[in-house]
Length: 304
Image (cartoon, rainbow, N blue to C red; front, side):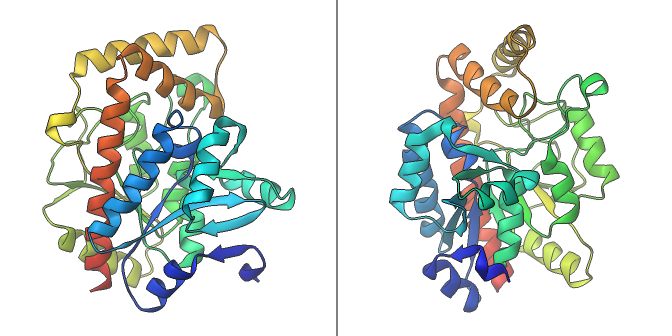
C-alpha cells in the first residue's frame, strides 16, 4: 500500500537492500532554515559529506504529492528557490499535502516518519524542535518530541535549538522514555554552543558504541527514537552571551509581532542570524555538516 505514495530513489533503495549505510536528511532546513542560495549549497555539501564517510544520503521531502526518500539536485534546488512558499510539513500535514499533490518540506518529525517507512535508521539534522519558552502558558511543544517517543529512528543533532526551553525539552524527553546520548560530551549541547547546564543520559565515545545501543534497543522492540547529541565543533561555537542576547531580542520581537506556532522557529533563526551579523548561519552550517559525518559513521557501524 505504501508504494502508492512513496518513492525511494533507486540508489537509496539499492543501498538499503544490500545493508549499506544510509543517512536521512530533512528538507525544512532547505526551504525554511536558510536563505537562497546558501540553503542549496549547504544541502549539497551535507550530502557530499555523507558520501565522503562511505554512506548514501537520502534527503526527504514531498514533491507534487509524492513522498520522496532521496532527492536529485534539481529537486533540492527547487525547494531552495521556492523557500517559504513550500509548505512546512509535520505528522499532521502529510496526508493533506499528499492529497492536494503539493510540495512539502519535512520537519524532524515528518522526516523520521518517512525514513522509518523506507527502513532508514539514522537521520542527521541541525537541532531538534522542543518545548518553546513560555510553554507553561502557550503549550507550544514541537511534534518532534512525540515522534521521538514513537518512531524507531536515531536523530543526530547539536541538541535542541537554543531558541527553546532546554530544561523543559529535556524533561519531556525523559517522560517519553527517549534516551539522550552525548557523543563525547557530558552536557547537552545548546546548538550554537557546545555546552549547557543540562545533562545527558549516557555519554558514548564512538559511533560503534552508539550503533550497538541502537541495535539492542530495537532488537528488544523498545519503541521510539534516540537523540544523539553531538556538540558543534569548537572552532565554530559561538560565545554564549552573544547568542543569548540575540535570542532574547528575537523572542521579544516575535512576541510583539504575534508570531507563534510553526512560524516562530524560521522567524527566530532568521532574526538571530541578522543580529549576529550572519555568524549564527555559518555556525549552523558547520554543525549540520558535523552531524552528517557522525550520522554516516553511526549508520556504517549499525550495518556492520
